[in-house]
Length: 283
Image 1 (cartoon, rainbow, N blue to C red):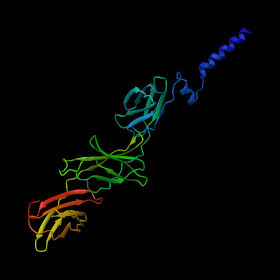
Image 2 (cartoon, helix red, strand yellow):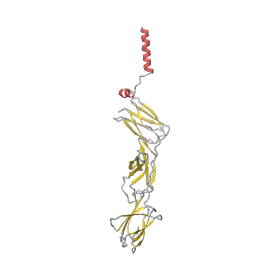
Image 3 (cartoon, rainbow, N blue to C red):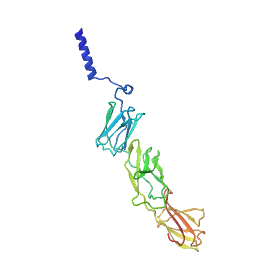
Image 4 (cartoon, one colour):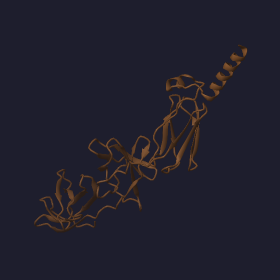
């Protein structure tokens, strides 16, 4: 009998070594001495920061095939966020290991989120709103270098309108002043779509005719223009002809000291350029 008991004990010990107890998710989380589950959000070539869940307080280490390494203590709620130093490569692996023994290896897949489109044909320092298309529910953001100038959520129809936070400027932009547009969903951010901020389109006033009370206004063909003459509050709007000219007539055009205020508008009624002068003066 002793020999039989010895064999049973030996088999039981071997079973514990070769076949460790199976824990469900609930059991693993409840048993603090067991490795906690490690939940990692999908990783793609568009991923800019790694997010997921681990047991609160665990010291988590992240390593990528590209050599990026980071380690930190998981916050009290278990949700963690780690900013990647650069883009991940498709097919590469990201390795996770926690101080509680939890581990995970996640392969990077190709990202599907694309940059947003921008419908504004011209952007100047006076532009206050950007219009375009993107992925419904995504967040479109615009940057100049590392400075964020605004963001907007794409509507269910795929359109967005982004309000720029910078104030309107009457100065031309610096040379090669670029805006970079991205859209993000979760921990994915698209590559950037770049637009150049252009110099103000030219506006000129000529051929003042005091007898007929007319002036010739020249700027971008087909664009709209707001005009105020003589400091009055009345504003008139017109569209420039195919040759970019428009003969404007007003009884307020009475002499060479008459002030003329012009604002060139884009297709979304954004201001593109401003003209302020007295008739007969230099532009």
